[in-house]
Length: 246
Image 1 (cartoon, one colour):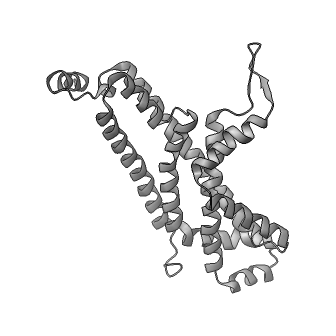
Image 2 (cartoon, one colour):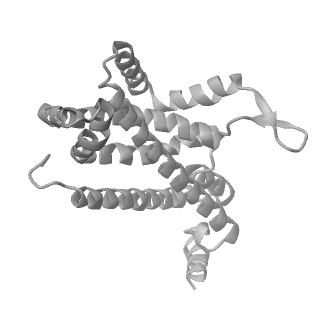
Image 3 (cartoon, helix red, strand yellow):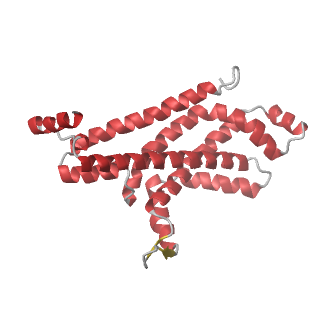
């Protein structure tokens, strides 16, 4: 019924929402949507882990470790994410050896989706390091000293005491960074990752419905980011400690 309505809309008014009535276009766009969701989810998880690890390493007593983290943060914060993506895909990727593909040929060790996930995770992770660092510094120093006085090692105190408190403080800023990360996944288009923008360009090349597909993209990203913001806000309220970090 819905497909017929959109088809009639095109025939009568020339508004071509082909993704709602054409099975091929619908399947293509759905696959792009799933790829975007998969890439976004993977990058969110990896970037948060990078941020937590980096913030922990900044507490190291070794100056070389702290400086290495600072260099990583400076590199990824001060260079464009598209340039980073090209650096990983064309620069580092071209230096890696090829592996058998099972059909007698060879293929790169990492495909374009993997490089996109690595590049964007490290890009967002650099910002997450600073977000978590600020959260850690907001935890009273006496809290860490109390944990160490109870026999916790520095790592145990960070993981079991400092990090849970710092995470609560960092959630609002983390939410903003993860929203930007989801929107940044459109850059994967540049290395032919079949995410929403890439498959949309294929559809409008065939159907010549650029304005319609751009509106579909806009709505899809609005909904996708809206779901992420809603979940993050619910999580923030669920783990809030009354009187701490408010």
